[in-house]
Image: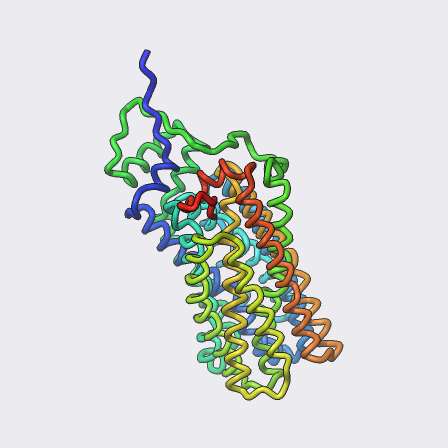
Length: 459
C-alpha cells in the first residue's frame, strides 16, 4: 500500500523566500510590539508628572514599577503556556486585550495604589505578548534570517517606546499624565480587532499540535499557493520533541546548561535595561534637564535603538550569541559615563541616548536568540520562562533604585549599580555561543538556525 505524502511545513517555510504569509506575520508582529512598547513605557515617561500630581517623592514610583513588572513576570509564563496549548494567535490576542483594558483604566486612577493595581493588570498582558510574538516569528521566518526577523519586530517595540515619550513631551503639559495611558489602551483595543481578522496561526505550531486539522490544510494552501497538497497528505514536524510540555523538557540534553544560562542572562540584563528605562526620565531631571528635554531624550534613545537592534540582529545571524557581548559592554560604558558629573546638557543627553540604544539592543538580542534553543512543542514555554526570569528581576531593580534615591545615594553609585549586571550578560552570551556549537546541540541547531559555509553551526 502506497504511503501518504508527507509535508514538512516548518522545513518548507524556513527554506522558501519571503512570501505574503511571512511578510504579513512580520508586519503584524511589528505592530503588536509597537503597541506593547506604547503601554510598557507609558508609566516610565509619565512618572515625573505622576509624582507631581500626587505630591509624592521619587521613591513612591518604585512600588508602581515593581507591581507592573510582577504582572509582566506572571504574564510571560502564564500566557507563554497558553500559547503552547491554544496557539500563538490566541495567546497574542488575549495578551493585547489584557493590557489594553487596564491601560484605559489607569487614566482614571485617583491614587498611587490604584495606579499600581492597574499597572499590575496591564503587566499581565504586556508580559504575555512577548513570548507569543517571539514564538510566532521564530516559526515563520526563513532560517537564515531568523534572529533578524525576530529582532526586526522588536523595532516596533522600541518605536513604541519612542512614540509614547514624544506624546508625553507634547501632550502631558496640556492634557495631564492620563493621556499617555488612554492613548496606549485605545490603540491596543483597535489592534486586537485587527489581529482577530488578519493574523494567521503559526503553521509549524498547527503541524505539531493539530496535524490532522482542516484549519492547517486551509492555511497551508493559502500561505503556500505554490505547494500542491494531495488529498491524502500528512503534515509532519521535524521537532525532536513531540510530547506534551513538562518542565523537564526545558533541561533535556544541551538545554540543561543552555536554559540556566538563558535565565541568568535575562535576569541580569533586565536588572539593567528595565531599571534604566524605568527611571531614566527621573534621573535626567535629577541631573538637571527639564521635564520636556528628559522625555525627548528618552524618545531619541528609543529611536536610536531601532538602528542598533537591526545592526546586531544581522550580526547575531552571522556570528552567533557572542555578538551580544558588544552592546552589553557599550551599555556599561555609557551608563557609567553618566555618573561622571559636570556633563554639559548636550553630552548628558547624547550619552543617555547611547546607553538606551545599546541596552535595548542587548535586550532584544536575547529575545532574538532564545526561541532557537527550543523546539516548537515547548517554544512558548521556553521563551516564557526565560523572559519571565527577566521580568522577575525587573520587579526588583526599579524598587532597589527607588530605595537608593530615597536614601539620597550619590547618583554615581546608583548608576554603577544599574550598569554592572550587563557584565554577567556578556559572560552568559559567550557560554551560549559555546553551547550552540557543541555536538549535543548540532542536530537541533542545524534545523533551527542557518549553517555557515565554514562548517560552524551559526545561530
